[in-house]
Length: 96
Ligand SMILES: [Zn+2]
Image (cartoon, rainbow, N blue to C red):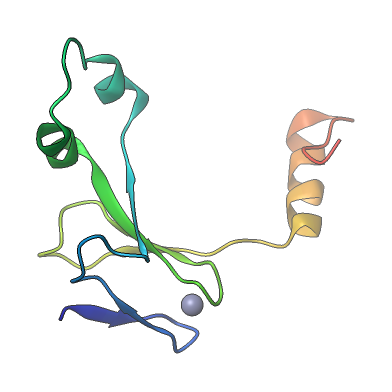
């Protein structure tokens, strides 16, 4: 069964169907192209798979399919986001 080791040490297995750790995403542009009756299998082909670590919540996105290495995205603490968004949004904050 294919798997990756998350940076936190958790083993993420993604061979099961359905898979608890695998999520699917689609761009708004590609979603907007969908019309008429939807075939779930054809939608799946246009979606990008990512794994969400249940321990640290990192995301491992397979932008180019499972044959290539996934890209890692780690959550930042809310405090960091507040400091960052205050610079770019003036007085506004995402948590308000
Ligand atoms: Zn992890």
